[in-house]
Amino acid sequence: FPGTFDNYVASVVNHWQINKDKNLDKLIQALQKMGLASTIESEQINDIQVELKVGRLPFTSNSKTTKKDMVSMVDVGFGVSQVLPVLVALLAANPGQLVYIEQPELHLHPRAQVALAEVFAEAANRGVRVVVETHSELFLLGVQSLVAEEQLSSDKVQLHWFTRQEDGATKISSAELDETGAFADWPEDFSEVALSTQNRYLTAAETKLWKD
Image (cartoon, rainbow, N blue to C red; front, side, top):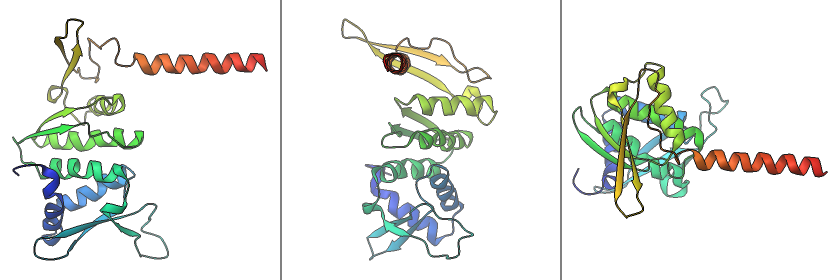
């Protein structure tokens, strides 16, 4: 796929739908698990144009009506449109293929960030080589959990932190996960902000209660 993969997503999904490819079922399952959509369908507009529609949640198969609340991709939130190319790229990738993904967690609910790790693990288990840039501690915890649950081998994961030094140079720190999903050399500031903010809130809340 030369160029930006986003340009091919609709065509790939349409191909899966026409050929009843199992990847379409996997895509729908991923969207459901991440709480983003109940289904996805393609509609051929003309010889060169395909429109994607997704089923808005909540939708249950045992509902009294089988009618789906389908809307065009252009009318849904950034979360779905942002992550859809990521999901399709990972599912379409062949074993040995290298896939670069930048910040897949953008605009995603925390629950969706954790569930996203499973799609990456499934691709890695098929032999796809994935390089992902992320700032999401939840996504990383999702990967660690999968390793601990033996759904992903620890030797398939390599972590690298990029830190800007005072002299302007970039320092790269690397670590590997053990069989429990744990790793050494945790960057000092990786979760420092979250812990500091939590402590600040708890202290302020406790002080407020004592004042009242």
